[in-house]
Image (cartoon, rainbow, N blue to C red; front, side, top):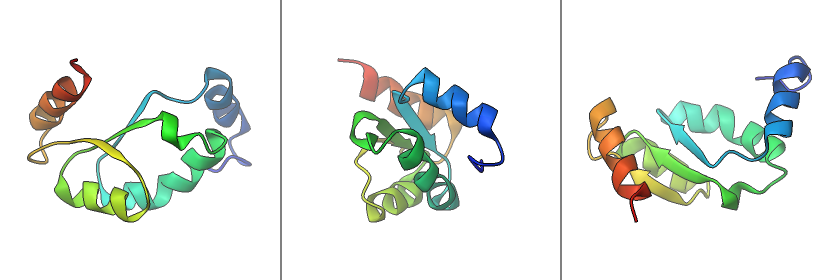
Length: 90
């Protein structure tokens, strides 16, 4: 999303606050979304729990300085759901 071209979407994200979690599904998603996440979170990225669909995406996240809270064992929706459940369950 281009913040300047989509001010309504950006305003919604800003007024809703920093998201509690973000899931990345590909290394290219990390590449193209991370700057926007930094902008919209006012650099409070450390307050966000990041999850990855699989090991390759997790590696891309770490390479860009993100703390990865959860990585699916295999890049499937079920493994991602299981990983998130394990991560969020105290």
